[in-house]
Image (cartoon, rainbow, N blue to C red; front, side, top):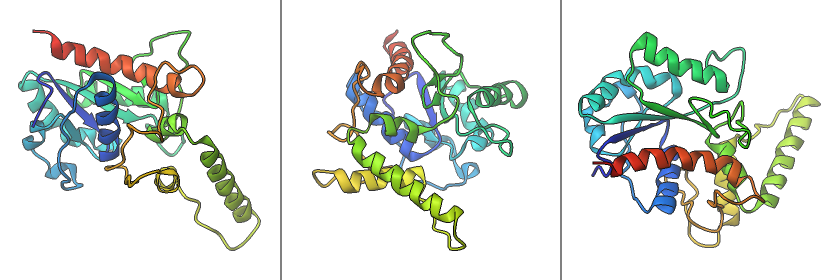
Amino acid sequence: MKILKKTTIFVEGAEDSRFLQDVIQSWFGMTLSVPPPTSKDPKARNEADLSYDFVIYGGKTNIALLEPIFRESSQNNLKNVVFLDADKYLQSEQWGGLENTRAYLRHLREEIGVPIDSAYIFPNAAEISLNDSEHEEDAEGNLETILYHIATEQDFLRCWDSFCQCLERHNSNSNHHYNVPDEKAKFYSYVDTVKHDKQKSGGTERQYQNALWNLDYTNENTGSKRYLKPLRQFLENILQREQQP
């Protein structure tokens, strides 16, 4: 059941909606609705997604495929808010990196006609730079970048990074290569290894309102302020609009 009456939130994956659902509940006391698992093909989705607060688009380059859903949302007088990853800047990836992601949003609006009202780029940048001397935007990153900096058990993450670096050194000096785990695997293992109760580690079921994560966006002594304060400000603007008549 849809809670937000003026907004539809578009996210890349169920992991993103799960994270946002928890931080919104923690910071603002609102529990937003997430759609059930559905086809991974964006073209197979329809207007039924608009009965929930979140729409999952399944990858940055899939946003254009959901243009009819964006338009339907606008016709229902809802503001379309998009969350997407900056990702890494690679010459082989046209839209990788913060500035290229901003260019991609302009491309979606101006050349394809996707009605996007506002956007937030993980890990810590609004679509339009705030030019705030106190806030330094990351040029690359994603949701996992945020998780790395708000995880409370940093010793585990340092051990994990050392493990991956060891595998990479081995791979560079041997004909027998190991698969180096990716960032998502890191946080599955983090929750499985550190959890103190029966928490689930999967990104769609993972809980963030517990001792494994620091959601205090004012904390000066951790990475939480750098990665959570701009996100909270962005969400606050959206949710304040919901309170207006």
